[in-house]
Length: 508
Image (tube, rainbow, N blue to C red; front, side, top):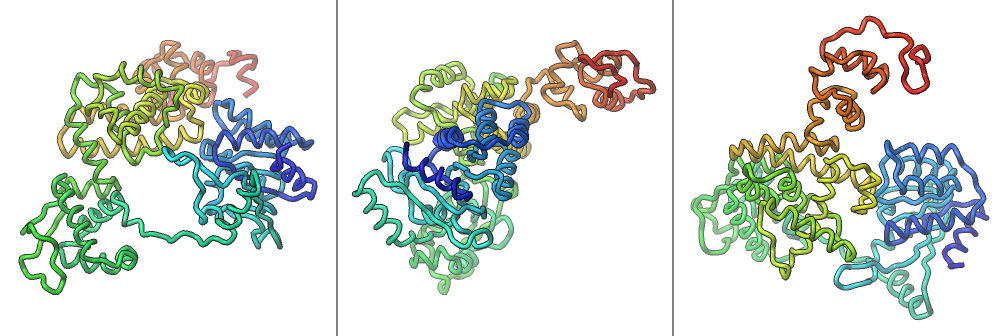
């Protein structure tokens, strides 16, 4: 038996709780399943609560509920928020004894863990393979053990494969110093977004006010080279100007002058109508430019996939659904099928951004499946996207589509506006376009709308004409009465003796 399982069982024997940190979601699930098989606990009520947290339970839900029955759980970004809350609350009250999690659980949560078990301190880092995690990340994980509000002491244990790795861990993490913290303004997307926001709000109006503002930031304090920072800011200003988000006046060709030499000829800046709206939408200016360039090419020959790929190929949608080696052929087939629908040309396969483009195709295919009413089980099996991730992606898509609609309004792209408006509703609800009229009814979602549609009730007029008995059988008493009232009809009497399954209406 692997050492981590022995220590986990020893923790249970002490009647203590533990957090087990692993590097991937799949590993969190497998580790939890293995520990659960070694325990005797039986919690059928909690198992049922976890299973029913999802409207349509998936294999992941079944796997989680079986683990929870034994007092063991896994926790990662792929879970629904309701499931996460149930796990965290039951860990706090001592019902769940062990949580196997990815490092995201290490940030911000205070839990009653006596032990933290870290399976590995290495993580996959893209093209460079496996690499050691930062010291700060290790300290975050180790710091979950022995929280003062729960325990008088705690233990953080990591596992080495051999003596050499043991020595490396000791020197790197026990004796090592945490990494320096760097200002986020050093990251281009943050700087350009922040700069546009400051100009749009009127805090920065000219070179002097910009210099004075940034001179007081942690970025300037850390960088210790204001002339160089001025060059970076000037580059950002000209980008915003080229993208028509701001207007510069008295533009000079030379570098920034020090504040004490500035005169009335200094460069001034103000936002355009477009720039002000981009700032209000909290969009990265680069994303705004990408959306505008794409929308310019949207016409009657394009469709919803065009818009889905457009929003998928943005920084705000990251992390995108990564294309695995075994999926490349399938995703490439999807790309070929929708190739004429792309709003921007496919980059060269040798381009540094090609992987992001290819991942955006998979992400767009996932959204396309969702609005074609594929269920969560299908999405998990086909695209590897878990129920919790589906919710996160839908929220991001809804925001980006709203932003695209606002930009299309400013640029008067009316055809794009109409399509985006419909697509937003489809994405929020996961339905085909034909169900949109029924979604206007309160209490009717993708499942009830599809059921009504299949029985010939396709719009509000059909609802008015439909017999109340038919509606009762399809959607139940409360919803049937409600939707009749919503279309202006008063239901004075509920027919008796009508069947819904094996129950008469008198049973309601």
